[in-house]
Length: 207
Ligand SMILES: O=C(O)CCC(=O)C(=O)O
Ligand SMILES: [Fe+2]
Image: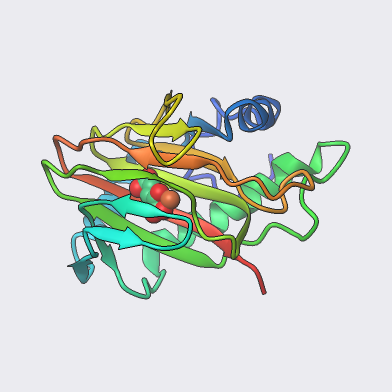
């Protein structure tokens, strides 16, 4: 069998592109267990050396009123295993999308924005918000560790909250403008984190 770039990175047996698209249509997001356990541990180890700094606890803009307790890596320089994951997932998704009768994006899917976030134990997580409209197609958040739950809701007050499976080793995939000729941006949040939560975000910034 031909070797795949994601062979030692992704555990692909749970992934189902048809189910994912249906979940995104229904809820705005879908998720799967996706990281091989050894690789997840490698990512965790590499996140230990990153220069995390606290983000602001409140961010108020025209569209958002966010309360959070989180650290992130400013201008995260995606190297090592994070770079391997970004490439592998890009390749894997392209292969999966290739079997569909219609490509679901107006522009080719290509992740070019990377974020590493760490919620310390006892963090409130991040309140319901929408991500910037400059991010298109799909937004993927890999969960490396932690028990904080991921939710989709109808608005910033958390109406009609639906939990999306987000155990360590999973990826939560959300729609973004450009997916299925629509500009929809789902409200999403992370609940209280009893244990430290680390997530790696892959996004595509509009050129
Ligand atoms: O940590 C996560 O899983 C989600 C983070 C998030 O929503 C964001 O960074 O905009
Ligand atoms: Fe977000």
